[in-house]
Length: 114
Image (cartoon, rainbow, N blue to C red; front, top):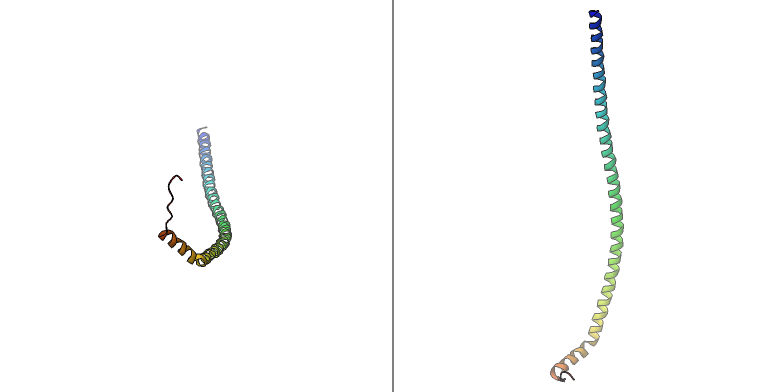
């Protein structure tokens, strides 16, 4: 009976070793799959980030072009107004200088509170 028990114990130990190997392989496989999944997720995240970055650059370029057009239009309007003011200033320059000199050299004092 002891030989039979010894063979049974040996069979159980062999089965335990085999089960341990299977468990170890399963752990290794799971670890490998987790790494693969993590790497795949990183690739997907990077691709998504690149896509969104390209969309942002395109949007930014479109908005900048619109801003540039508006800025150019505003500059044209400002230049036109400046030219108009300068023309008006040149047109009335002599009269303004004459009026200023007359005010300086011929003061007309006005009493306070009147």
